Image (cartoon, rainbow, N blue to C red; front, side):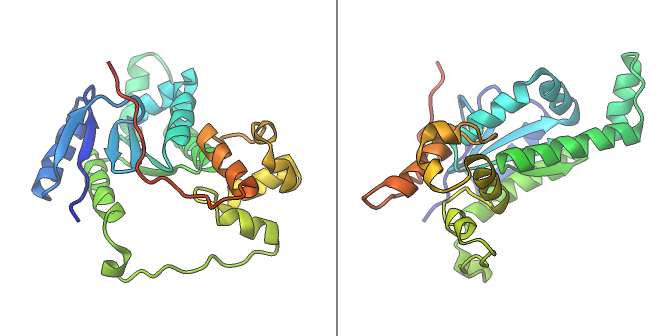
Length: 236
């Protein structure tokens, strides 16, 4: 079965985008340009947002980053954030603007931002100082996402049981990890309360799509099927 196209947002420009196009074509991937409402790159059913260190901080401080993550969480089962850029160059850039920043201060904020993203949104983050490595990661991620598990020796296994059967049950829901399961129980108190969308709204980082899935799994009298073909909104 052929791999899906690697779709790049029509508005994407710059060295990262150009490097991804070159690498993808070398690996035989079909690259398509089209408007994307959410994210910069689409790898089948997975969405990737890419940001330089400068863009990350600017969008984090303005709140735009958190809105983007909310949108990815609401529209895609799997989404990734790729951060690229040198901390030393960012410190030098800030100095030219009259802002005094130390390397340790920037490193601390970057690490804290990444930790918050992964904890609040179950978003996987890849950071590299090198644009070429960022491009390599995105193309390799596309290949791995669409490589049958049997071909690289992986086998599906049951998740290890925790000490709480309620957590074990929540872990069977696609997109719910251990940290999110604990947050759900902490905010809702019990599984019964999770049957109500209004109760789930108090759980930070939980998008509409995932809320609907949790309610369906807990309340549906019919089999709940996961739609793998993500419907994308078109721009223009």
